[in-house]
Length: 411
Image 1 (cartoon, rainbow, N blue to C red):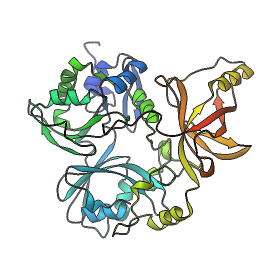
Image 2: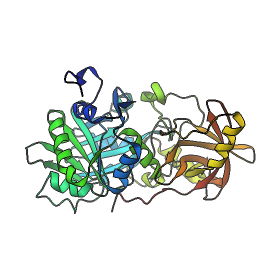
Image 3: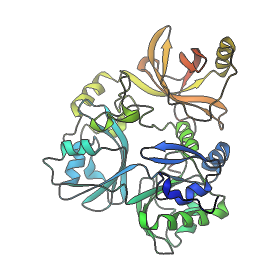
Image 4: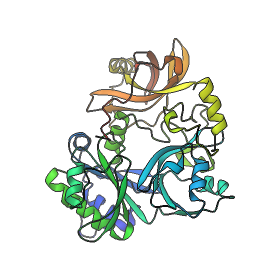
């Protein structure tokens, strides 16, 4: 790294002075107004750390809000299909956020910090909140610039946490729970047991003032355990293996904040309901309070969703044959595809595939799909319209159950 390297000229997060130095591959990916390392050393190394070791990843670009005041709980209870009154202090609820038509605005966690304050992290929702706060006595603060977020994932993450913050019983911290903790150097962080990769892990909410101190401490505590800084690409492939959704890929976000950048779409299938994405267990029709989208979701629940989220495996031999026909060598992208691939059954359009990628761990090309519900069972053979720079054509895919790998987040 040149001595005159100045990361301040680059649009990075509060951890950029460290991640830029560690990014030996010099490959970056855009996330909101920030650039993050796409890969640090190598995809297989970073995926190996997720599945067999431990990694740390910067997830700070997520928009973070704090809700406080006498009406904070009632405000969230109106916006969410889950019963907010059941969230305990130091607990988080993963939840859909829907518009009045029952379409997803986002799906992300709400954390309860104390009796009267909550925080969340996900996509920007400022306009949506402002449209609905009128009758509620609630203060809403965008705290995105105040906190960075570091995800530590992998089977060895608990050992690293015990070395990072000794003297506390981290073994007993249940999934979807968290608490405030202090590092030996004095820095205070929030630690939550969550994960986006299907592996055991934790998430640190780090005040901006101690961002580099905490990052350095995590790397130091993790060094004996082989901790690896992880780029966006490996984490993204791991979440597909785990069957975890990403807005902008599995669904386009509804609501007024969606009409920007990659989230704007004219695709009639772009909007999805939580019932279509296997999130029906997070919709509580029996909760005492009314909530946004309830009637639309209840009607869909009664008739059944038209589409269902499943996994799929792509026939690699069909891709090779397609490239042979168009006279080009077959390619395996090292990245997840942002293309939505049409799916057909007996010549009829029946859904679409998303997040198609090569999984080095499974040695297969896999993806997620929303397919007509009567065809949403393992073993269904479909045709997928594959797009290549030199041409396009149909390739065979097989519908499979999710997840592709065992979910170990609660283990």
